[in-house]
Length: 190
Image 1 (cartoon, one colour):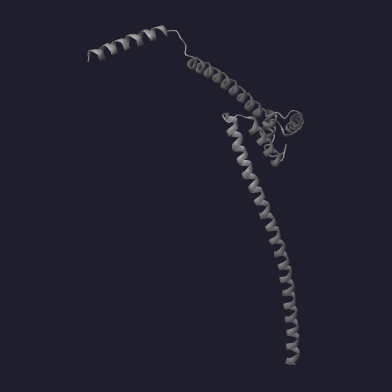
Image 2: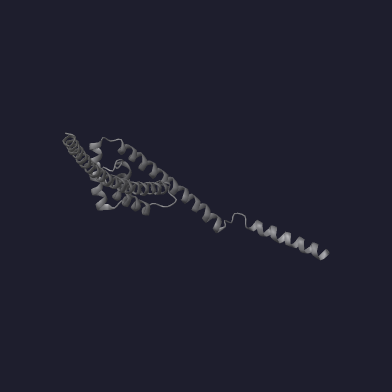
């Protein structure tokens, strides 16, 4: 037992002296993580400021009158063709395309996929864009279904019109036969 006490005493003595000598020493992993966290905070702040300005400008563009929207839309489409900038694509897709006057549904989906590939998944814009893609896919599906229903409706309407014409022809023939029958009956009764 006395050996154990000596061992514990020596252990405590050495560990306490070891800790004293480490005062002021920065562990590389801890200081790197703090610097890394600060860097991430700065990047997030810049990204949030950038997102705010993008959304603010999008909101301003969306309030413009229709003729000004068309002019700006055409300018942005030319700029996008030259530079392929995701922010320009954002403005085209979100600010000027509320009723698909700027680009078609298909082209808007292409723009949104391009934006998706350029934005970090951690960005709030990524989820907004992803939801917009889902909505456009659903809209596209509903439009194609609507076209099929309209086509079927037109086909049925054509058949109905043809059937009505045939029915009118048959009614006319029946009335003609009644007239003939009435005439025959009058001649036989005489």
